[in-house]
Image (cartoon, rainbow, N blue to C red; front, top):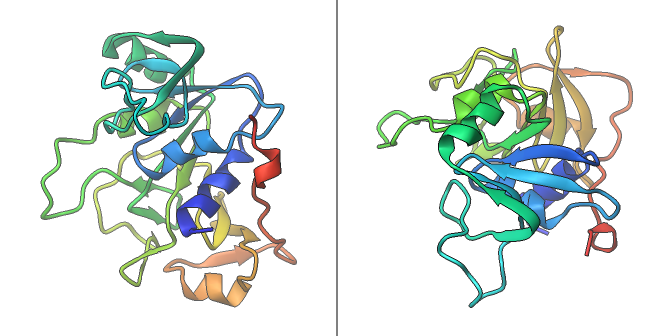
Length: 224
């Protein structure tokens, strides 16, 4: 199981029944593949769809069914498509129960940077700013390091996405919760020690007793 799959399977355990959940571009879209059985979730993408599922089998892709990053998706029974104005009214109106976003950095106060890396051409922050500001819960799904450098840092060196503190960080090494006191290490991945998590993190982590092993959605628990 690679790092991205571990992250997506762990994030899937944060899904709650009968909720509206936005999945951001890239890694977060994998969460749609691991919805636990017994859970009914409506996934939303800011380009204008509610009710999408995992990517279709090869050869059954529809160019009119994509997520915000242009990746192919499937439309589940009851899905609805609409324009960007309605999509962002949902986001800005506080109607999203949760959003799952990728990240470039998260700092010690829980602020996210995920829309621009200096020196790289980008079209803009897209829906990231609105999603962080508007969703009831914000989960960042990202790999713990990039090119050997921590992505969880004491202070952002990249432009922040929003001033709001995010709700949870899920990486292939750990689950970390930003709080008023700081970043609390809640879980560690199977086979990963607390010392390894601490050494791979560029910000101080608070330890709250024994750190349990991270659970993930196992194959037999994924909804058919």
